[in-house]
Length: 114
Length: 113
Image (cartoon, rainbow over the protein chains, first blue to last red):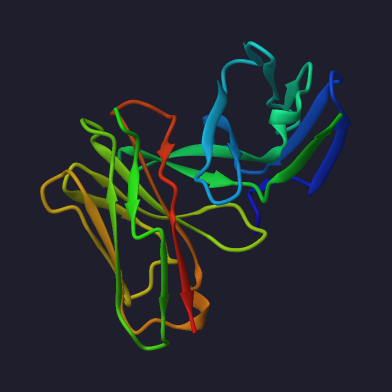
């Protein structure tokens, strides 16, 4: 039972254009959402996050949108750069034992072409 | 702030052997998490420590797995009697209290032959 889904395993965009990565979730107990970027042979690197009480958060070229009624979030990268090529994971947080357990999607491989 | 470190980075072991991994979190991060990632999947939560107390364990963490954080600083994850299905990347993450964002180490890649 996959509670966080990234239905696009890969995405290819041209440099300078917008990249849109999508994520759906099913668990209403998730209260915070995060995007991580991962290069081969490295651990995931935190990129941007959004609270469940907001619908948009922006940080430079990266914007995350949350549609709580649809249980859908998306990450927009504009303009896309070749260095953005990586695997992007959507993660959802729920409280556990006083901490926050993250549930990850399966990732989307983004390739930004020249 | 040197980031989360994990040792070893790679471990190859034979089925049935025991292995132990170490994680050093970012200093002053009270929360420490272990995750496991297999090919084509996202990381899956294994266990969580608040200081030295292990407060949550996933059902993925079978009896062959044990984790400790004896002084509330570094943590170890031990797998006894390894099986081929244990082959995965083991990731450690840490965060300060009241922080949603978790900061990951580079991982330990385990291969069981």
